[in-house]
Image (cartoon, one colour):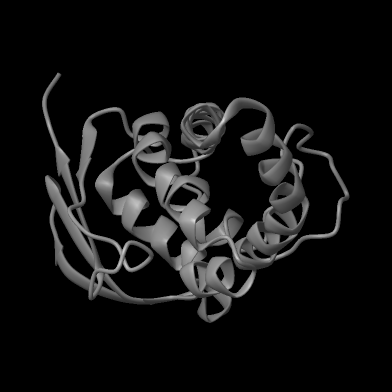
Length: 176
């Protein structure tokens, strides 16, 4: 199988990934999240009104996590599911200046990345969705990694959207 790098597919993925022959215009991941946020904001307001904030958060988190897991599984089919490829994924996540990223450690069994600026978080704040940013964006990180590389476990103790000085991602490859 020819090795396809995340950086080859992630920065310009079509919004709808259901059809590999799709001719949908491509946008950066940050642009895609902005489009999604503009739609979801009024929906979240209505959902919270109907079911309350706790249940709304639970429902949205569940959907976002499953979408991220499925996205990871789909990309696993087009790539080699290891930490090296997961490191390449960060090129796509950061495309267009979306993230300022420092790779702090990279080996076959560990990948440590620090994000010092997150334009996703800035965008959610700008749109009045700061309280939802962790669910809508950060909540994708672990499930995406699970879907892409089931042997990779993510530890993250802080995020910028939650007030941390940076986001630190530690992926560790564990034997199953």
